Image (cartoon, rainbow, N blue to C red; front, top):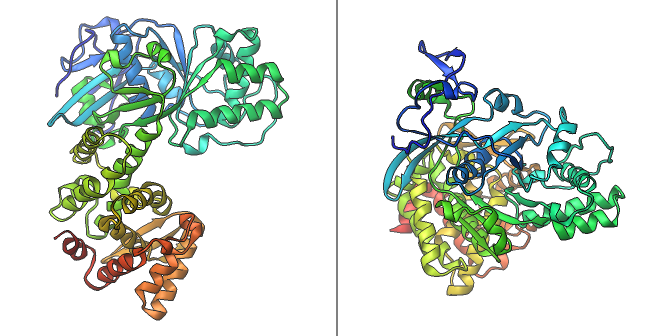
Length: 529
């Protein structure tokens, strides 16, 4: 383990016996921090200053705590921010009570490959002041949100969180959806601050949807119109608040449950919110340069990019990181592998992944060659992180939509750039069709088979219904090309007829025929030989 001791404190509180350990340890909390001499020498602690609350954060989950709050904590340590975060669970069932029981404190465990070395570091985060359950403490949240010191709103409410849900507006009551909450809170701030243009806020949504900031602003304005909140308020929302589009990138496995007892003994305290994350982090923010001075991540040595155009960075992440997963995971799983790091280290699938990334995906990314290649090398290093158990079967969830968004654009752009089809990405379509061969077990999933083992095929009902019918037809006629043409021709799945792409039907059919005849692994070995 390695770390840098920033503050000399040890965590002490009422003793707690971990259920799997006979050793008495202390629960992580703020009141007893000043009563002891030091943390373990390899544990870093953020500054224990009582900062003014400057950030309201919707989302108390692992990702934001190991990403945004960690970054703010580093800014505070460097003397570059001087503010704390008020955390608001976006749903009725949140973990506000757990966070408050630890006085906003928790430990981020960074570990994995970094610069060619395997490193590990623990940091106690002190940037969170408290958590508020919006449905139980709406009036307190309104008072907090209306304070002049509040400047930033961060969110991660999942992709489904930034969506319009019709609901009425009742003063003094908490709305249900996240955009409705934001609208109501902004209106309360508008009234409390008398429409002061300087009272506008900076929104940094981290939901993984395109144009997340722009979308959130449009939903807020839609609620404002439906609730008849008035033209002056709508103008203030539009003109005085910054809804910035962002892209976030860090793998956060979360609570290391299997190692909790060990860490409690090593750290000297029990932490119910301990969260593990990889070293790599990236926050791309599309916004005016002067706002970067309010969150000077780069001056703190953090990996953040403020840009006028976010799209190329999104394309880079979706195609290289997510695309490499989607293009490889299903074939690797059917070959008997279970984890991403096993796939990358495998004698057959390691070369498959690297060739797919560097030969077929990277050339389609609209950034300079050095920048996209450096990111690709970092991605492959992250895939090999020995501390992350990233299951291939988890990646398989909703693979049809993922392939359409993450892989198909690279295939199309490669064909346009090179005048030929990328053979490995085409094979990934055959592997997808093969993976979706299963028997109906419930409305929510099919059951596929890998040798003698069963596995769940999880996707939208319309997708599962389609593949069930397509494979039933194949079982009657035994014609791989007919099956492939049926799948590629389903515009419901791909938003177009993929049979129209010259040569694609033939390439995918040949790959599927090979898979059915000799198996996935021999087919991949033959393809890359």
